[in-house]
Length: 630
Image 1: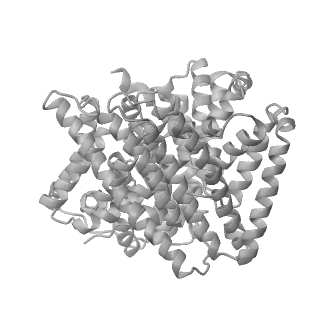
Image 2: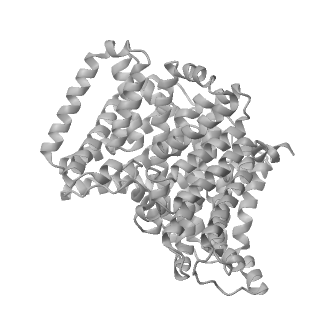
């Protein structure tokens, strides 16, 4: 029986666990009560989403009678799943955050920072709950087109989600040092009143107020360990409250807009698919087949690791899920043969960076959504660039493997190789099946995830007979928690992006970049920008914030939107998996169960290889676009 590495555990390890503090029985009981109510609900919503999307495909292409209400209901349920999933993620301390300062702080200093984080989250929720109520009342008489439901029921998801997070924050603060809590709350109140009193002078600063709120305030919030989603939320709310006279209900509306796109439903479903691949034994058999083919070469298991990440990434769509599926299966055998753990981690992390462009990457889905680029084209365009990046990693791994003393496996016989690939055939067929459904127009990028889920369950239950149905519920909850963590980032980043766009900064940025040395200079600056943002912010918020600003500028330079998307996604992936800030790097270390310091030096040659591949891909658009023109 294989072992699932929960995505939540990866996020927690990557984000840093919260400093321990004593909890009273009644506050813990309150948190558990919220969990017992919310977790079954989000699990049921995911099952309902799978049924709705699968039913839509069946109705459209078998019964020839499309479900006119299917997408609308799925989008409404997704908003509820995201907000309730954010509650689950907060309860389990699984919202992504930066931990550079937290890791270096003393126990007392970390306790202060944790109190500040919970107070900031409570402040954000307390301000937006009434604002969401205002928006609900204004939308009460507006009905959805297909189901004729009052839109207030949709906005209610944000109200309920923020309300439950506020309750959880209060329960945590009750158990913390009350002196620290009182001081931090007092400081927050003083700063809030001072900022509100100075609203007119601050609003007259022009775009300097953007630096004040979206650089200074958000930067401080990120630095002290406030989760990324709430840091963005604090920045957006602070800007509206202290620099404008725009009602906060606008922020709620932008949050709703950010996570109401049906395409984003692919996020939880592909994450669930990734977990199912490991739980059903599909991923393990794929790795075993590759190992039988090249495991006897010196450094052969490095080839297996890169190839497995390439194949699994083409199925699951989640890089954390990819690493969780591949590493536990392959690392023990690599270590037994004498591979250095530092090299293994370096290769795992950079393989994750390479895999950001392999369909059905969640990042590709999101960038297609925000930049209105064909997701089908992105799926096709990402394959060859990922292959180029894989070859670059293989070259470095072979060079570093020369003269090593790793034990090589005996060459497998042709019959053994054939048997291993025959056993792995259901897994090998899945990427082809997914691509056939998307390219053939049978299912959308969102719907095709349900095809993969149903297919994987059938393979696990009927062919491999390895899936334990008792693990289904925990996986559904894990999926919802990750959806909430990612979805809330998208929601608050959308509110931030709206504020930045409203200020006219986009036009100023376009004017500045117009003098960046033409298309080549703009592309070079974009690579640097997204590599840095990928390291500091994590990929999705970086894309949501800056994608709407930069894609139109790329179009002005006649840079193909698909090519630009592939370049910036790969650049962002390099930053995401690069130490010392890249969250993906810490996720890889968490999966490998070792200190992040172990692979900091060995990863540098692999990152250099990825950068060289990225420059080649950026300079030769055909690598991204060649298959689209045939």
